[in-house]
Amino acid sequence: MSETELTDAQIAELVAGLFVPWKIEGCYERLKTAGDRAVPFLVSALEDPRIPATAFISPGLLNSNSPYYLISDLLENSRSADAAAPFVEYVNGPDPRFRQDGALRLGAIGLETCIEPMKRILTGDDRDLRGYVLMGIERALTSGRATPEFIGAIRPCLVDLLKVPDRFGQYPAPGLLVRIDAQYATRTLLSPDHLSLDNPGLRYVIAALNDAGSPIPHASLLPLIDQLEPLAGEYRRSSELNEALLAYARNPDGNAEARLRGLLKPPDEGAETEAARAWLRPPLEQVQTGAARALAALNGLEDFDRELIRIEIDEGAGALSGAERNFRMASMYYWEVMNDGLWQYLECYAAQDHGAILDALRAIGAPKTAQVLETAGNVFGPEGPPSDPVKCAEMVRSFSDAQAEIISNLNQNSLIPDDENIEMLLYLYAAEHKDEFRACASRPS
Image 1 (cartoon, helix red, strand yellow):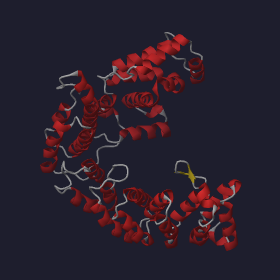
Image 2: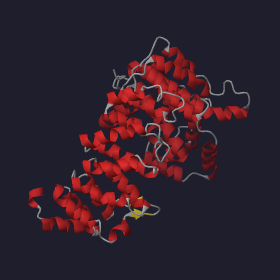
Image 3: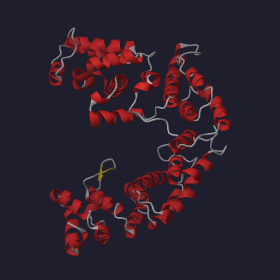
């Protein structure tokens, strides 16, 4: 039904239907067609006493089926100047949950009527509300709702927030500034004040420049890498170094490959005690991974893992080359066991791809990890898991105590041996087989 076919009475009836469980979905979909004409009815509906009682799921999570959520969503997407009014009231109200969501919606609506209340939050001391406004601004930019006037008003606020963390301890302002005006953001972010170890948001500044495709001049980048390398045993510094290495791969000199490969050394080198090695290993493994990712980028491969998933979904696994399939199989196994362990893997994936995953792990240079997985597969017998995934899952659920103990023991020990950094090995494998990654995106020019 089009907008012209809905009378005011019908719109009012549809809004009332948002409070009736079995009518919600149909009314919500039809109200999407009403455009600005529905806004006064939606705003009035937010005064209904049933709104607060159903808006949130304890301990404050929004109820996505509640009238409040659906009405707020319709207002956010209405592109009406009047849609901001109720959220201005919410951010000034006593309930912190409504204050947070109100701030989010003001940023997400992206119209002139949001500017003044939004600027008060962005320039104020409430870090919590500021974080929600910034999340909303990202939504407005992604949806294309943000007007030029809105963007012009928030740009100076974002510049003032480049070194200010949000409620999660992150620094979203550099990335948002790039999305608004990449050229202006590049000039701003390349200043020595922002490309400095003294900047707590340094990683986000470099990442924003990388996202903008803006090369960092060697005169700034190489001394920064020199300063970060000795500090890479700290998580923050290793993250900053990784972004700097990617920037280096995008704007390399003749020493880039040798320098990146020099960072692939084992993470326990230079540590005098086992305790020191254990403490250093995670952040230095992160540097290994970052250096390998940069080597892949140096060889024209960036964000290719997402591209492989797209090809596999759209065209099937048969469309992948042998090297691409090895990358996908080893990567899939790694993230599965890191998230859920062997039990989940055996019930969901082993029957379909077990043999291919073993081959892939060996191909990327992870024979010890492959041996752990092969030991798990041998619990089914010398031929490993059955080829039928349903039968495989049934067998797992009927394991004997002895079989279950083997899997549990493997789970409790390291499924990924300490000297096999799978993420690093994956990126190195891609870099070394770049010619076989024919369907993947090249480094941006």
